[in-house]
Image (cartoon, rainbow, N blue to C red):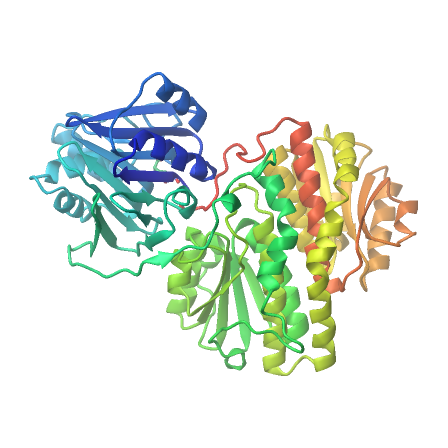
Length: 602
Ligand code: HGA
């Protein structure tokens, strides 16, 4: 959360910052601001609202200078107003501070600062850092930042500029920061997409790192000022991959990228009669698995549970990370704790996996972003290779997580001896077909757009699915809520009669995952129960099914696939249904209200 860009070099800093912030706007879009250093002054411009408001203000108020810092905000402390936007300046205007995270002891710090005569101009926790740094400053900016941080605790990616210094000082604990290396210029950002037009050479700062960034170079230290070596990593994400490429929204582009994403996730890993994952962990050491994740990744965890239990016959517990970490979970050395996260920065997930590790579990991250915090803390990482995901509502990362979990289950099943070679060959053959099947499913878009149009006035939606399609129902409901703001509930189909059936009337569209599976007949019975009460059914069914159409008002057909892989294909129409509904309602698909991507606050 929060987009951060810092620049020191020879280009106009405001243009680099604005361009970078545009590429990071998915991280927060309550307000935006920047500070640029010119002629020994820090000039600041900040505005509530989306980045376009700041861009407009900048068009009539140029900020010349080639050193600057900028921010897009996702508010935690204080409403999204102009004064609360970052950067925060000291009263004398000599120090500008940008912050991502939460300073947990900001209240006592603020009281002390007020008592010592400081005046605050915002309600944010972040502003205390500007005043603290000012108090500590004796001519050495990095030293002042270090001293200030020794009094603050919480999470921060901190970026500081001073009007007398040709440098940017940065520090991180918990919240991510990456430095981009150029020639005669260097960059700072909270995520890689901001850097892609300028450089592929990056340094991912670790927890507790600080850095002094100048035109000539970067010096990384720990918070005590001792120099530390950090690897320079080449990132392989292309610039086009992080741009819209002619699509009206990132989300739609990412939905259409899914066949290629599946090729990347699966490609090179599927062998004739097994799966090569390049993991060091030894599956036979573990007798139970815990999977932790948040949001969409949690539904991938749920699908993963069914896959691992079916194929590797290992008991699996799944839990949302924010609950897991606080409930003293029963973990031992025979527990494999898996965490799933697109960004690899999700703070709840990171803390949950740390908790499992502390208790002796082996740890595995299923992650998209290379070099991210979680990948540095777990014993092993299985990358999903989805490329940059910019749309706030996750699509292609979800499908890649599902494919990764399927491979993991086959791999563990083989290692544990619970899977016959014949069954493996069959599954692998099905997995190889997935990119093509998703491609075919995308052809349903016009039909799905028609259904979305028909039901877009609905106040509520219900999603039902059984067994491994229950998480698909939940993911479908989540997508709809996130981008259309229509209230949607999901239930395992068999649970409907235990309560939610009371909701059914002729105004309620009910999406039922009724694909080919051993539970197909039971699901068709659920469809009939909905119809008997006047509900309107939108079924997702397998091509060639002639039954479901007799009971459902609308049917979306998806290609036939092994039932354990059905979620990969079936989620696609639900993503499109959410997308088309949001478009019908005129919603901001890529920047839905109140949300932000890469959730780095608790
Ligand atoms: N606490 C700060 C920064 C918020 C943030 O990092 N969001 O992701 C604020 O509220 O401005």
